[in-house]
Amino acid sequence: MSLRLRLSLVLGGGFILIWVLASAWMFRDLRNQMMFSLDQRLVASARMVAGLLDQLPAPQEGTARYPASQLTIPEGMACKISSLRGEVIARSHTGAEDDLVDHSGFHDQTLDGEAWRTYTLDRGDVRITTADRRQEREALNSSILLAASAPVIVALFGSLGMLWLGLGRGLASLNRIRDALLRRSPDSLEPLAVERLPRELQPLLDSQNQLFLRIGRTLERERRLTGDAAHELRSPLTAIKTHLQVARMTTAGAQEQALEHAEQATDRLHRTLEQLLLLARVEGSLSFDDGVQMSTEQVARMAIGDACAGDRERIALVLAEPLASQPLALPSVLAVAALRNLLDNALRHSPAGAPVSLALRTQGGQALFQVRDHGPGIAAENLEHLTERFWRSSGSAGCGLGLAIVQAIVQRCGGQLHFDSQADGLRVVLRLPLQGAGLGADQRH
Image (cartoon, rainbow, N blue to C red; front, side, top):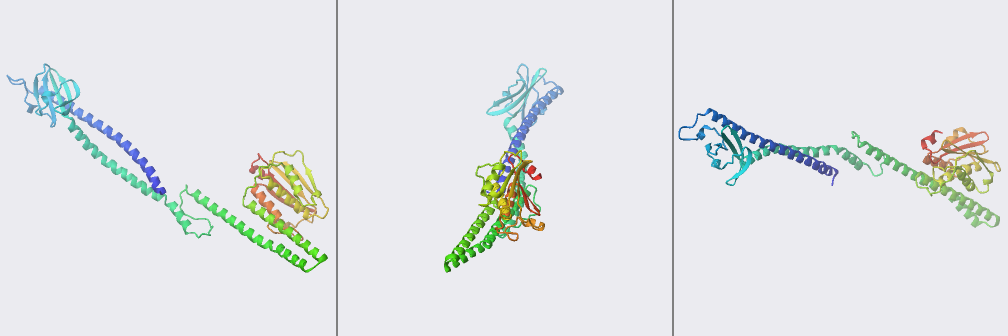
């Protein structure tokens, strides 16, 4: 069922119900007014006859009756004039006057199978009774109600027709959106442009365009991941193949050296694959929630434990006092991965044996991790490239994904990442939100 038909049925049913109730109310009042008017006609006729009696001369000798022609009874009505003793003084000639009950006021009675409405007026020593048939009353009432119902029916069907046309015009904007979507090519992700939309439909269009934008970003991430994997994995795979070929063709020491180089290339390939998959998961907004909550100190000690094997003893942990005990407001897996990548980067770019410091403190609803190395630093113009994928400084042995992963985690969790290059090394400050603190407050510090 179309939306237009459904709305028409619902609203049209409401219109019909309202019109029927209003018409029933109107017709009931109209009928009551009509019956009241007919009753007033009986009263007026009785009073008119009483006035005529006052003007007519007394009946001739030997008769106690007035001639009916002198009473001027309205057509369709019966009239009887009697004395208080019950003697009939005058009557009309409808055939039912003799049987009319002349009790004072209004009465309903049936004479010869016909229903009559009567009114009796006491005037001096005479009693005047006027009456008309119920059938004639109902016929007059039906004709009036029929005449009044015609405009109501026309107005009702006219309203339903206008409702159908109005809904069609009102839903035309949805049809324009549908047509715009049908005209698009399957791979088009450009924002949808539809002019002169009602205010109520603008959020729908905005949501649709935001969906296209998210789909475009997702496809772009997949293309970048595919391209990066194809580019970065080619070198270690080629190196592994070359070293294995050398090992097959040589013996003794040269063979052992070739196998060692192949193993190193395999480790590099493994690290690159792990970093690529982690970056794809972070940018793809996949869930990392494992139900484990860690405080700032616990995240730091876990990251130190996961840092480059053999070098973790070089990391000096500095704890500020007091240190907030509430857990971080992000999955512990992401917090540990971000800090571990910063520590690995600092260890890799520091001279052999040089210490790396990790200072912890909490401030304004955030946990601050400051990683300080003693390497050569980095030029100021290269700071903005640190979080780019596969960007490496000269002499770097990494895969160029560690800081890009940290930046993706920071963007996902509402944190901040700041680099400060100095003459004796690089200082990195990572800010992550704590539970119970609003992101807006975190981002202001």
